[in-house]
Length: 357
Length: 277
Image 1: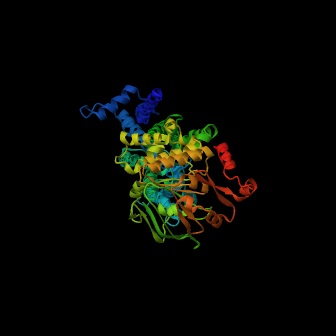
Image 2: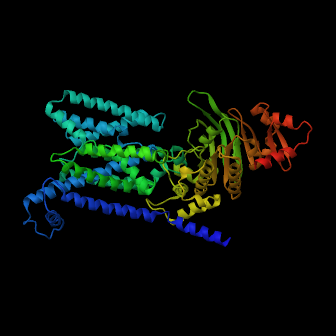
Image 3: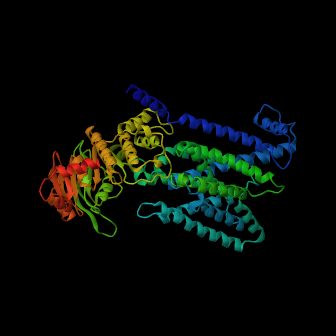
């Protein structure tokens, strides 16, 4: 009897922490890994610069007390103006796509949902293609992509809304419908586009970070960072939402209201990423999966882990894209080539546990 | 504790499901909502929990109309154990139970030790502390039902609704769930459970509300309400109620007629129950 009491006390003691310290430790380790990846990616590149020179440039810029006059101009341009903004941008886009994927999966209660399911990508692609074909007509490619990505989501959402409710199946179907409409519109634009514009549309759609600059970083990174923290703060509510509409209602979380907030914010960061670098597939599907396998499904830990892993993954893919061959490979191709086998592996080996919950 | 007054509801095609339903449940009672399939039990439930908007009637909880209560206020007043449950993600049992604390949470990310302790207490009360670390989705149906009951306990609401809590369980788990509900009700929580097993109502409930087609047929203590005449009205001559030492049991009339020609009622039935239990 006493032994039973002791066992119970020990069990309670062990459970009381709910394993949160271990999970935080994993997230911190992942963050360190991200920094390491960035450090390595900075050294790699088509133009060969020694490690010491790379970090010399970096330190001079990070430390205002150091004199930047005696910097090698070429090294400065390559490391500070080309590689660093590109790496930062790829981390931000990886974070955005991974966390948007995680949030969509939670909201739709389906671990196979992608950020593109609501037609964001097709809408954004149409907006960008429109800006490329009619440059005088619209202010900028990014803004146009974002506007049409958002229009696509709202169209899907309104299409799916029946008597004040939005059943998930209807929503996904509506997303497919809206996506195919915008894909058809993109085809029309390709058909009427002049040769140069056509080439640009095709290249942009394949996805890549070639044009990354500090201007992109300063506009995109703050938005993604803000959205990331907003989504993270709502992550416990996302846990509740993933149990279903009726249950989340009885647990005190208004499903309609919070799903709208979560979906709009996720759509915003997806559209921002797509408008910046084109369509990059699979990240939003793979990273939440991997994070869930590592830390379990609790979104409070899963979302930041997925975000950091998305950043790491995107830096690696982009580094491969710019170093594997002498010419650039669009990073969207690399993520798809790496991503599709991952999904096949998930389906074949963990199909039952992962896909049936 | 719960008062439903003159509730009306009809689905889109205009055919009424509920027409003028009224009943009340007083504090600390375990009330069975009993009726055949399609009698509107679940619809009545969903109206009370505000999943469905009813055009006419009132639902009072703790004396207050729930019509204008916010989702969060409702969640502090009434908890709900749903019928079948397919979780998309393999949350651990302790996390599922911790979700019951949501309406009481204040902070943004961290959940304080106090709430975790409440979740563990709920697990302990229901007697499933030993499975706290298991993935909820890998449990058997009976265990899952207990986890959801523990979550409702952790929610600490004065009212608890259960939708067919035992319909998918084997006999021993059915008895276990009802005994736990009995215990929770005895601690002061008002429980409304819908069920289609008349014997469960007879054995475990303080009160019964019998739903017929669109309407209430009877309400009161189960042993008085569940009579041959009431059962005949909803089941059209298939069962009989028999006395059995301290309790009663509903039996199919065919069985009664073939086994009890001589009239030695009771002893055979007790054998049947011992065998099954």
